[in-house]
Amino acid sequence: MFEPSESQRLIRETARNYAQGSLTRIASELDREARFPAAQLGELAELGLMGINVPEAYGGAAAGAVAHALAMKEIAQGCASTAVTMGVNNMVAETICRFGTDAQKKRYVPEITSGRFVAASFALSEAQSGSDAGALRTTARRDGSGFVLNGSKQWITSGDRAGVLIVWARTEQSAAKPAKGISAFLVEGGAKGLHAGRHEDKMGLRASSTVPLTLEDVRVPATALLGNVGDGFRIALSALDGGRIGIASQAIGIASAALEESLQYAKDRRTFGQPIANHQAIRFMLADVATELEAARLLVLRAAAFKEAERPFTREASMAKVFATEKANHACDVAVQIHGGYGYVSEFAAERHYRDVRVTTIYEGTSEVQRFVIAREALK
Ligand SMILES: Cc1cc2nc3c(=O)[nH]c(=O)nc-3n(C[C@H](O)[C@H](O)[C@H](O)COP(=O)(O)OP(=O)(O)OC[C@H]3O[C@@H](n4cnc5c(N)ncnc54)[C@H](O)[C@@H]3O)c2cc1C
Image 1: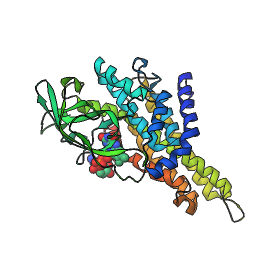
Image 2 (image 1 turned 90 degrees about the vertical axis):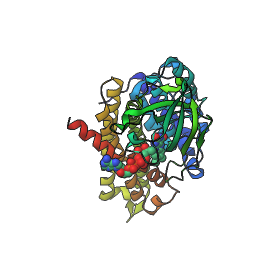
Image 3 (image 1 turned 60 degrees about the vertical axis):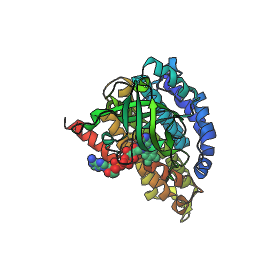
Image 4 (image 1 turned 90 degrees about the horizontal axis):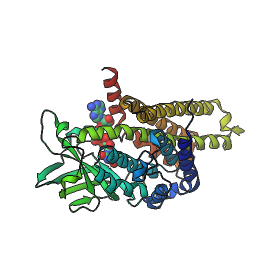
């Protein structure tokens, strides 16, 4: 059985109170208007949720990876778009804390945790390289003591809003081992030559911002390098392991909202003279979803606990992500089914959950990539 510690409980309750209060009420409006949740993100920063697993010295809550997973689930239950933006902010802050110099940590992390930067970005994917991130083409050429970045990025969450972006670029061409020649850089929002393109017109998460970026002769000093030259791919993979726990938690949050609404609707809606909750077909659907989400929750907590204990957790994070996101997709599909025709229109939230949850088996590594990782670990 999982019993949260005092600090984990506090973080979870803080997130839950905020999500069930104002966030749930505004989520459908944010979605309908595709409005970036800037005010909500500021409030989350005030509540200490923008650096949950970040040391207090940099404005974080130092509450650990389990607390982060618990908070992500709660916020996603209120608004999935706000949750993904919060998740990326936390991931960038953590990655800078883990791999950055003292100066980098002092310069950027308090800006993120305090909300002075409304967002931060993780700019890895490119139009031709998502799953195969090691094949990225953006280049970083040495120029005097610094670097000049050129190329383009695709699908960057908050790319037009970020105060700081971690940008991956190739510092060396190596045909034999392309991932070896990649380095990571801290690029400031508004840097000369950094341009955000048009917002993607997405199926779901419509209040989050997803944009392509172009980098045209973006000059950064040597001090912008995160880690060492050639460390970039290792940094990305390490950050993604943690990010996968966050997305698994997000999926469970969306699915939990869908399940709660399904339960309520099943009690309210009557057919053939009784609530549909009395029909065995509906009860079995609800039972399966409740069981699957409970199992997913335990896998996610296990992966987060491994991370917190500083044990290897790549396999655990991939298992949690593939299982939680696929079961969450099932939960949201069932929610639409239980709502009948009303599940297909925006009057009920089931329709939004169905759209929001779909991307969770795609970003932060597709289900196929997670299975590839799990099989690789199993075959070792
Ligand atoms: C809303 C949204 C937000 C995002 N935010 C960010 C972000 O902030 N930062 C960022 O860097 N990226 C971000 N991404 C990008 C995301 O991580 C990629 O879309 C994802 O990794 C998949 O890459 P791809 O789209 O290029 O698909 P591809 O890699 O082209 O994959 C296409 C299909 O082929 C399958 N496939 C690929 N290779 C294999 C293989 N070896 N074996 C079996 N199947 C395979 C995939 O699983 C998938 O089904 C975001 C994407 C979306 C949609």
